[in-house]
Length: 135
Image (cartoon, rainbow, N blue to C red; front, side, top):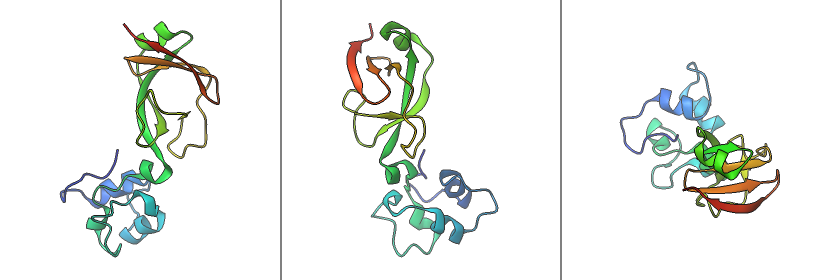
């Protein structure tokens, strides 16, 4: 999740987005933030809380949350409970080239079928190789 795109967010929202503890100061938040996560409309001089409006940690790493089920077959993946994984920022499920278990995009997901409930894809551990449809 990102910091809300309104001015009703708090320092706690920013601390949570940055995975910092509740004792982190505003300066600690700026020190931990990555420049690519700031919304250019609100980033300003990076000297006040409102500069974090719409800050998105995942965007700064080039990833986005993708809720998918997984399993040993296309039909198992289509019907399974969904969990959060990470895919390339700005790409749809059927167009992404990678899937990771962490928002930094450094740990590739295990080889198996994944599905968003509409389309299933087989990931071999380094690339998607097959595309299926959920009925």
